[in-house]
Length: 189
Length: 189
DNA sequence: GAATTCATGTAACTTGTTACATGATTTA
DNA sequence: TAAATCATGTAACAAGTTACATGAATTC
Image (tube, rainbow over the protein chains, first blue to last red):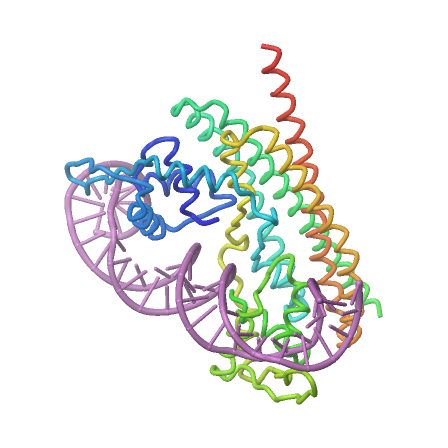
């Protein structure tokens, strides 16, 4: 799986510029796949060389011309081939720096850890409130491309991110408690 | 954050060979950070060039000699510098192929999606049962390196992975239900 | 007799990030 | 007047994956 598959998938809905793609990505797929603009432009170039996408230029006044990409039949084939091949392991490797830091938690002052855990909770809460906004974007987008069925799947994923965020908040709160209790126990000794 | 920080952290407990590291990683940190053996060897080489680790050779008969790495004072400094600098955003970018596939779920036959979701549930259940084993590894390891405090943090992370896995199972079960209900509704029309 | 474990690595490739460059228009 | 938005990209770098190579000892 690479960004290129996601790009082909997005272009299968409608033609888009790299810039459009970035802003769409940022409030949709972003919760489980992210991309830098520079990477999008590069991958669009690669896909074009492979014949998976083509583009036309929309001239604009006062600002740079838009390069609007669209998927080609070859691109559609490549995308469907990918869709059909589920990987052997469904859960991809997680790379979570925050967890690595907790792993080495004994080297960090307890107050600092507590502070960071509270910061983590805040971040998760902010994510949760952003989901309400994303829900609206998703609803209006699925209507604009007249793909009502998509809404169902996108909402499944919003549910997922939401539940995971809630779980993480609960975990962080319990962890703060545990750290504080141990601190008290040690002071008793 | 890169694998190099994790390597330094592990070496701060005790000297290890690249091979040791891989097997330790595979049933500990693996749930939130993974690594290929080839990457470990390469990063050990880089760290050695930087002066963060040194090594000695343990000759063995009948099998290749062990190259046992240990952390240097420079390495310890680098590790502590990293520990002190928490990143601006605590939740790292997620890259989850399975979610991307669900995102394009409308292009996959419903039965196939159901099958993959059930496979996903099974995988998560297997992970959960592996946690019991990891718990034991962690307990005996923290004793062997006489670092009893580590156990606390490692168990916090096991709790976390456990809760997230449980949440994902519940989500997948509910999603299967939703998909089946919609199927029934459509057949009624 | 076949597969797994132990133990090392290199090379080529793919993917992702960061920094740099340009420049008009719009909003605060 | 400073910052954000629109819109394109390149270059250098960092990080991760896959394929290849070797070979004895042990377990099934």
